[in-house]
Image (cartoon, rainbow, N blue to C red; front, side, top):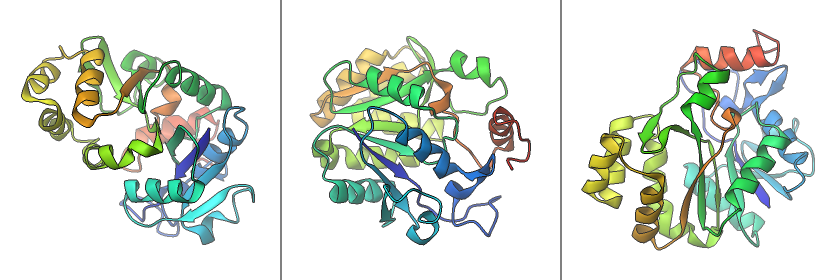
Amino acid sequence: MDAIVLAGGGSEPGLDPTLPNKAFVLIAGRPLVVHVVAALAKTPSIGRIAVVGPEADLRPVLPETVTLIPAVGDIMDNVIRALEVLQPSGLTLVTASDLPLLTPFVIEEVLDACTAEYGDFFYPIVPDNVILAQFPAAQKMFITLAEGTFCAGNMMILNPAILPRVRPFVERIIGARKQPLLLRLLVAQALGWSVFTKLYTGKLSITEVAARASDAFGVRVVPVIVEHPEIAMDVDIGRSENLDMIQRVFGSPEGN
């Protein structure tokens, strides 16, 4: 499976102004994007790797085997651009560049879980107890469903052919991913207000989410429970506690 790593974007509050973007924050002496690419490169089921971001800054830190693609706009613009360059033959992994805890084992587990059944768009979610057991002070956005409380993973697996159909909704979801009320409203608009009521009261099941989303977009949407906090523990510059916890995993409070 080909993999796309999103390492675009610009400066943000709290980020070292000498860095192009968050993907270059150092953890254990290496930029975040380097950790992610290294884990992907050692994953047996991963083939080609493309990284979207500032080419001049990425080239010195990444292997020559990695395809670099200049960022062209928002997240979905960059995904589409990478797909145009790679022309993958099947399902493709898309991941954020700020997941330094990823390991080949975790990536394989995610791929196995997401390809265990037929689907066009797989979205891994992580139970809150799995995250909080390892990172009890983690500041994440959790959503309660009938099966439990979950946090969205920062990766997805998709069939490139369905992207035009789901792009508008995915763009809105990505934009609202840290705003719980707006996220619920977007789900309601796309899947129906009865879904909003169930989601708001925690009675909406994962099966119903998948069925409603599949009907709404004409593609098979598959939420997948993955019990690996590594795919949800991204580096949020605005939340120092998350960054501190990740740095401690590497045994370096300063990340050097």
